[in-house]
Length: 229
Image (cartoon, rainbow, N blue to C red):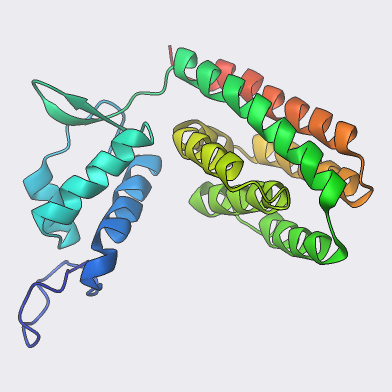
């Protein structure tokens, strides 16, 4: 992915990705590096050699540094004073803390969403859910999973609440990645997603909140068994 600081007529370097606009360079860099981490191409605990990675992605150092800072905020990168940027290792303590707060915020958003949803809201959530059901797994499943939950909680029309939920879901990506690679885990989550949609459609706020809590707790319990010691 080459940024626009090369001459307009410069030929792309071998092995680089297509050119991107300068203003989107940091976003694109974050997406690229996030994908490398979640697919295991940058393994947990590995040192990120920024010069090599910049060359691999066809990036200049500035958007790369900004992307690493963003991924540090998401919990995917840790900055070691001696080693530099290191890919984070999943830990049970971290996932427990993330899900503890997620449960409180997402249950509140779900309860309000059920109280104020409109027919247009329901049509939008159903469309997102149907697309999610067709996702093959991996990063595609993770992205459509986030889209589904965001579609429900967005109905609450509470921007600050959504911002906080979004931040936590970004931090949970390292863990949801385990689920996305498990056919059994995805099947369980997909069944529960339909139950959530039905409760939302019926306007049953307390039931929807309970389903969200059960869904998150089920994922947390599953993760405790698969996160390496």
